[in-house]
Length: 95
Image (tube, rainbow, N blue to C red; front, side, top):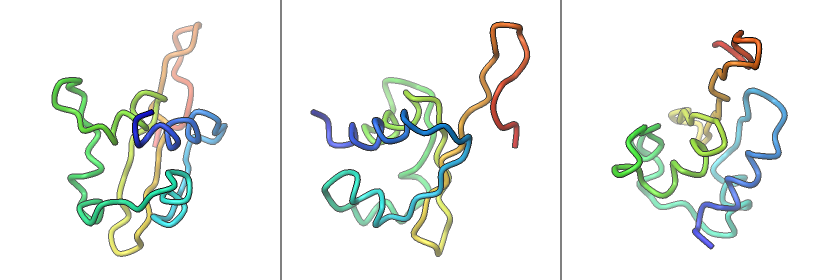
């Protein structure tokens, strides 16, 4: 099981369009500590290229979220990406 699958499962279960998690909460879900590099915005990059993606971003991108580091707060805001509905209208938070 890849290291970040527990985070993916957690986010998949969320109904809200936005989820705010502290590093401690993320580490609790993972059962492991985040690397020191997680303090940098680059670690939370929402890379669209599947070849260039780091393992961690698959945890949120694969389930429809983007990650945004809240600098100085040791927290991350996961924002659900807008997705088209069957009627062609956007569903989800547009902010």
